[in-house]
Length: 503
Image 1 (tube, rainbow, N blue to C red):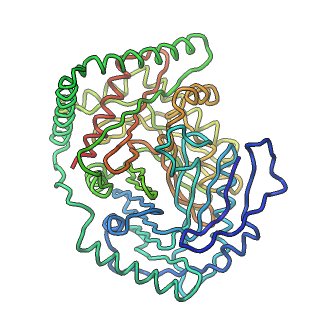
Image 2 (image 1 turned 180 degrees about the horizontal axis):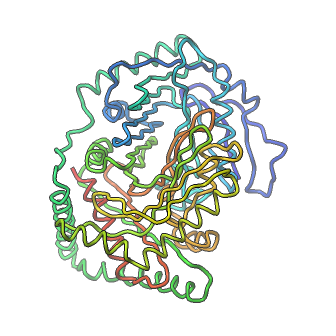
Image 3 (image 1 turned 45 degrees about the vertical axis):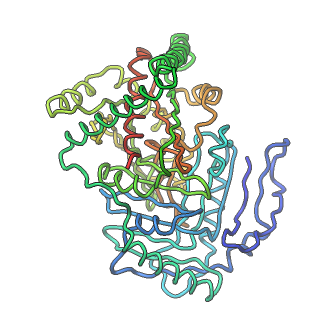
């Protein structure tokens, strides 16, 4: 494991680090903590201000931009968070990254002094990658294996509790500067708006038809460009399809041999757009069209990780947790009758039911040792999203001992829905083939000083660097999987992802 302790990102010198004498060393594993961590954050204070008329946080994010931006919004729940700047930052890698990060972030949050009103406590925002080491692809250079930051400026909106602005600062001068910046961004956001997004289609069937039309146009464009280069797109796609078949068939043989029950293979596509992509514009459309999902935007200096995920990993509040198994999917139909038929077929699918049971069993196995009560629905229901149906089994309960949301996320990650069964074998297969996954199928979320918070699986996501976009889509391979059908599933997901990125 490797962890960098708290460090400021506001221009102040980073505190010196010392090696923890308990750290195990083997030339690649060490634990780092800030020298006298209390000196780094005990001098910091926080203040919260109730907002009677809260701004559109995506519009504020668009106005603020830049490094150390973290935005989450779930319109259906009336919940949104935006953090700008990093009063403190925590980075970790290795098998113990979740415990390290949880301990560091909760400790730092608990040591912050209170200035004036404190009706909304500060939060640590961030996430972690699929693997516990850095991604092989340098495109993920700004996204370490696990990272949480305490924002200098934090907006939180909750439907039931109102909206608050929380500032974290070292003195009155810095407090005044943060207040001025928050006020300036709010004014700019009111003029700028979240994005010049087109109005959403009210009819879901029409929306899906428009999406399918956009995907078809994109494919025809690809064919035209490839033909102009003397390299037919059909040949390119068939070569990719052949590589996919080989990967799936290799996994199916391992399944037949009893080495593994499921592996979630993923495909990556990189696309260059004609103009730099604006994350706020993409997310403005996503939150209208995918209101039941969690939209997110995590920005580095050069790159942004954005997405609209349907899958909650864990939500924890006052010792009670909520999560669920989501596995097994079917594409939506363009017409109502076809739509209903697809949902019925998903519920009747033996292959999808088997895949879903594997996820339910894995989550139950992970949570039972730490839960004093556990409630699991008897059978899955169908959850409806704009492009797909998913089988979903809700799971909830109460903890038997204190744990943080981040620690629980670490116990559940990676679920069979994004990795496979058994986890260790499936992860080893993916590490050999997909070491450049980065934060795709990792998790994003937040946590407070008590450990309460929530984390979502980072799906329906893309890594953006100006005009260049990298997207991923996966398919669960189990006994009976058909390579061509699974390829079509990933094509549908990637097509929907890239269609949603267009202005």
